[in-house]
Image (cartoon, rainbow, N blue to C red; front, side, top):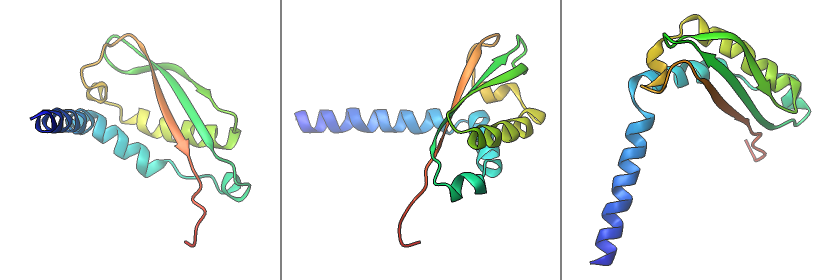
Length: 119
């Protein structure tokens, strides 16, 4: 009985997590970023990896305002995220916030990883 209860609880959390990440607004924004963010050639050739965190401010109507702030130790990766953000910003929709508060600052994180294998 305990195993069944744990299984059902786990299934609930998995289903809820999948639903939360596949609502229309955030999914569209993620698709736009995935189409536009490319691993910079220079960074790839130099085996540079890392995280880039983008901080954006959202106005009361749900649109980005001001200049975004970028936090990263690798300038090439930061530049790539900023260029992609500008493309996403041009077609921004308040639905990207998926009901989150407007008039706030939000963080987006990007991880650049190099796979080293046979391919």
